[in-house]
Length: 302
Length: 302
Image (cartoon, rainbow over all chains, first blue to last red; front, side, top):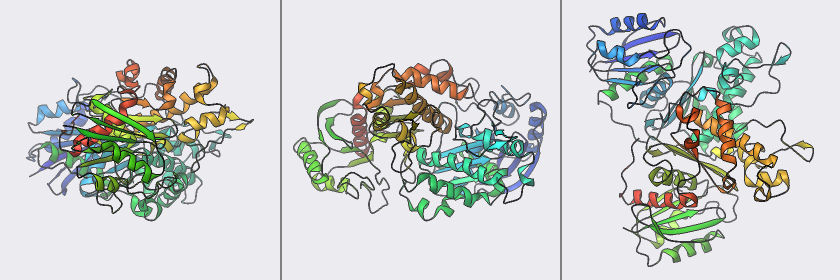
């Protein structure tokens, strides 16, 4: 069985074809431009490939409610042309196959739960820390949707007392919330604060202690709220692997022994981890969504 | 079918008998004392009542992992005698029936999802704000367990800049975290800050603006993390009904239009609500856990 997968990010689209075991056989990527043109390229990619279903993990916010008249739409994004765009319908007109549809971060959580770092656990959280910050939630063998879908990148976090830029407390860059998690800890926030891209800062730069403080705080609150069995930190900023031990220490200090679990007290190196699927987590997750839509994946039970 | 239910709180036990429709036919309560004596009273209550299953929602932390050797135990509570107490095994020795077992707040969330304010939605969060603060999570038709279980009462929240007591910033009362949510907004925190019980403070006392600030912040983060379809605020502190509009306003201000959902922008009075089952939410939830253990309740799907 050949399944199509689309990881639709705000910066680039990745399209691929894979099988029931989660193997990606082929993939291609291109920049996310105007929606009509971008979708045309996606459709061209799948033409003639004989896929039996297509799964999509999309940047958002998106409409995930099957009962809604705008199911499958991108909703309120500031990205030019994409607000109110009928993503799923556009593809349905081109391919008469079952479609899976979810957020990019829920897809990544699903991929990791099926074939990656959280395989067989029935429970994980996936944080992406990059241009934006997003959270995918997989719990008791299901992706969480609810009223809309998780938007945990905008959680309110405590400011670090030493977080200054230009001699003033750094105000954060989120247009909605200023100093929410994304406003303080996304890639663009790092660049705004330090006047250089994070990738240009040395490993011992004070930027990383601040970053670990904010991400560690958000992960702490996620543990307290949901008690996931695995927490996966992906995205461009997390390519700075020196952050992992710093974030783990923040979390242990924050929890201060309250949550009685060896996974946290003794084995946190295995609990807070990078994606097992590496940069393919999102695409593999989209593949898993496609398989599920095709009825070829049993719901995984914890 | 007669089902037994136990709402085991840190202060009092409530035992009851009910039916498949969620009706409580009989109930009795007594103080939570030493575990042997307390369990003896619970066993006496059910003796001769002919219950076919018993559901328990317990104060915690508790062990919810069926594969664990200490499944059904209270784990690390400071409550004298209860740490490491085999709650479930003690009852199993007295009654040869199926048992349901979960946290008190998960039980309350389940009760509200079955027969209360979140009936038919497949998704809700239940906050209890009282002697402690706890969160029950019901999402995609399942209660969330995971590594341990949700402990959201200890989430880290931002301090209010005007939160002072005795001329100093109020340090909070949580023995683990100081100024976490429970440390700042539980009933004992209110009493410690103002030197009077919350129930003795007038409705326009500044205590309530602070309380709404902290609870509103925690609910905001819960919405961003999980996007529940209904949020239910129960517990003794929430008997101060003037808090509901104040908390709703905090949440709308915090989100600042980011989450695009009419439930928040236009119908928040129906989104953030008191328990539909009133003070029976926990006992009804325990009844639902018993019914589920007896195989008489279909898993509710969203």
